[in-house]
Image (tube, rainbow, N blue to C red; front, side, top):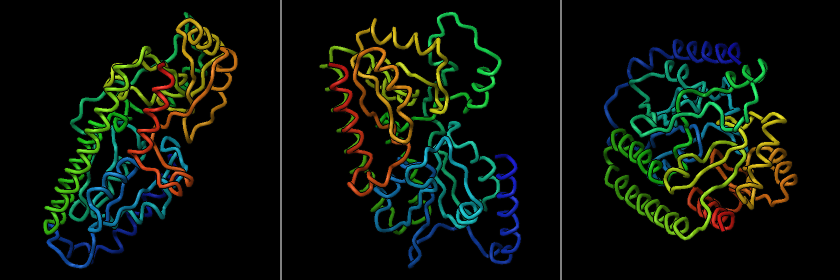
Length: 326
């Protein structure tokens, strides 16, 4: 992966050098109108969603990660990197989610592209090194190596699952768009206000649902829902850590099955874009049901065809949790 990424970055550098004559004429002066729409590139679906909601008809938004691809597994191609070099705005989630982004950012022309680290300055949760209770089981050398290889950094990056944190990220995008295209700043403010109202209502409805639920604990495939759990006073029990590729050991599986039984958990929830195999095994052994909880790391083709978006999927999540917590 490192070799392929270095090759990509070398190609981007070569393209930049070849076009240096044009680059010298590029100015950082914000756009004030004209036919060209600012090109906005994003790294995950939630940022694509807010950029489209805020920018509306005035921007051209491209999400770099293809439909149905898990962002933890994504690696940009040479074509992706060359396209990114033409972006006016590049918004990424940060907090360790996109392992490739630092080197990509270092190759962008800062006079042309405004770069937005959408989680910078937010109150972030520390990444848990081990989401399972090992019940005293010592990790093997191989298991420890896997934990290291899948370590995405100090913080949990799944901030968008707290609607109020997504609102804060959206405000960063709005401010950047207004900087790049001052002629439409008023439209960006209006669109952001509507988006903020929608997120406030979602937050209010989540609070109402959770306050009426008799249970506060839920089990899910990987540790993507910590921000949602903290926001609404819930407790997440995760089968694997921040990277869904991690899998529990046989001892951990046994412990998780016992946890489901002892804590009267009715559903084991798996996620879109992730194999349900382990969740189904735990549910079968514990004699409980499974359900889908969507971490919104990306959309599928079926989601797009059905017209699903961040708000509708989060409301689906709310209904799923409502059943699981009752």
